[in-house]
Amino acid sequence: QVQLVESGGGLVQPGGSLRLSCAASGSIDRIYTMGWYRQAPGKQREWVATFPTGGNPNYVDSVKGRFTISRDNPNRVYLQMNSLKPEDTAVYYCQSVLRVLANLAPQPYWGQGTQVTVSS
Image (cartoon, rainbow, N blue to C red; front, side, top):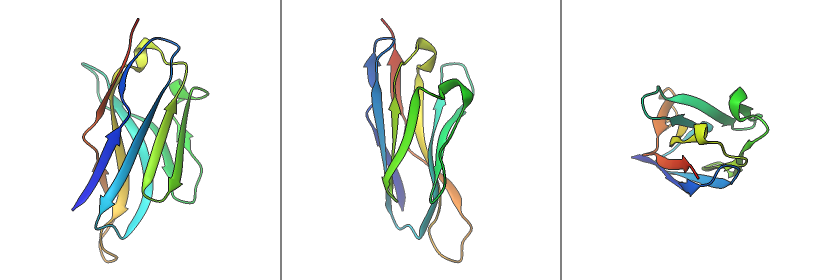
């Protein structure tokens, strides 16, 4: 069983900051990427940022310069969100593409989501 557990969401005023964390645990052979998606009410889930293992971070244009994705060990990923705007309000999901056994193809796994609300 693989679990991705997020934490760090909440309510913040416009211009404020939040830091999301995600930890992957369970029977994992190899992690290829860890990243974040978000889904606002009435909208499709959208990609926010990805940090490939051994690679460089990538961001959707709307968060570049405001959000920073980081990893301090292979099984953890963070999203530092600064200068938050009301349009950043969404449920944020951690995602990891990983392999549970060496002879299986990598698959995406998802966390349960954490609510981020930006409002005055």
